[in-house]
Image 1: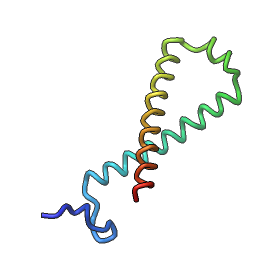
Image 2: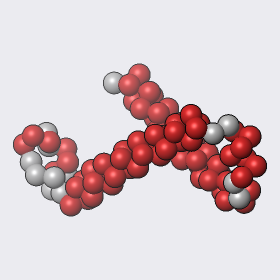
Image 3: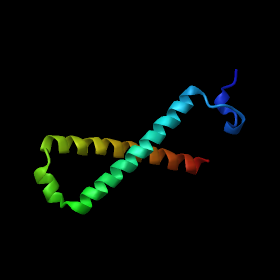
Image 4: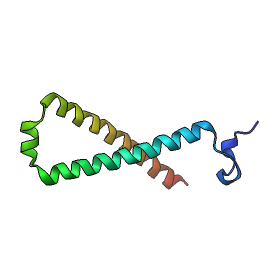
Length: 88
């Protein structure tokens, strides 16, 4: 039996996993936009030295590590998209 996902998206319904993925992506887009604007406001209002001196060092380090992990995941996705673009 052929995989329904091989059919043109306009000619079929989304399955539950595709709906979940789309929902998760929409939440991710909103949260990334929210984080981006929050960081932008922090940078506008406070000097980096002030943030470093007033922040809990352990929490700030964990935040930085989490953002690094997210960044590396996006870099990997970008590289895969670029590779697919060159192939197709």
